[in-house]
Image (cartoon, rainbow, N blue to C red):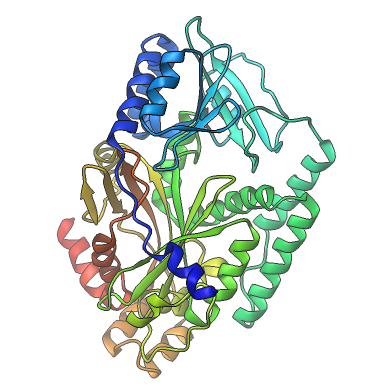
Length: 458
């Protein structure tokens, strides 16, 4: 049964959807042309944070029969009364209504309203499952902003002050959670119990998941200079981290199944797997939280034959030598504990983002995906000190050569990045060969080479 379940998603193949993308883009462009304030917002997003307005669209409300005809021809189908979805790619739903509107995702409605000095009513209280404001009304089409806290709804639901108070307490527990323990087993057990309690208190894994991710990003941001710089820019245009494509965790083989189990409790489901090749020695289980639309890369060292296993659920015996994920966890700890997220990938106009970051003194590594439908690159990364005892153990067990062990003792090792990702044609997949190349380069045993490349680049 497990093998059949694994093979069902193992080789999932996503394809670009140019017809659907053109249909959506032309519809949005025609609506922007009818709302000057929204067009000005699109310019401010690009100039201030390299964000394309189209990457923030949560859903649109349409009124014309011609729109329904066009979207159905492009792959949208009615999934529930009055709602059309396109599962072939990353596209927002179309919703039939009485007045046309475009609803944009933001991290905080208050933040958006304040950033743009607006005087508009906000539906929903802080930490409600769904909040929104009709920020840029227009006679032909209005643009609103929407903040999701784990709800799939399209309109705010009845307010529950007790549930909001529970959400606030849960968020504080996630923010303040202990990350360092005597053993990894103790840490994962503590984390799982915390997640179990949050789900029970909130009555929803989706609400718990949204709060979990908020706290996880804050911890990652505290360790990533590029993230702090970019977050300030995105806050200034009012959207916060509303443009996220995926979060990435590293896990050791011994604790991978427990990490996956915690993520599954938060509502994540196995979507597909990636294997970077025997040279890189790395694989990933891609998980998706279908209710809140969140994707996670859960990385782990893999041997070639293990791609045929349900490695997300089956035990993985030790390898003779750690590879990329194993080395990182041995140096910094598990991502779900003290290491934190390896990186967060956010949607941008890739060239604008690269140029704007360069102007701020933040350099990108060479892209590992450079195709019309997918562009990906990482910042050079932030380094963190490593406990010398961890390095000593790795060197003694043959996982680190002496020169790299000494370098890491003295200089530390890369711990986190920000990823610049651009998707076109609704493409939902990833570039497997490109991932192989970049993650070989990010193996801590090649940090000497990486340091030299950084110095040469100035």
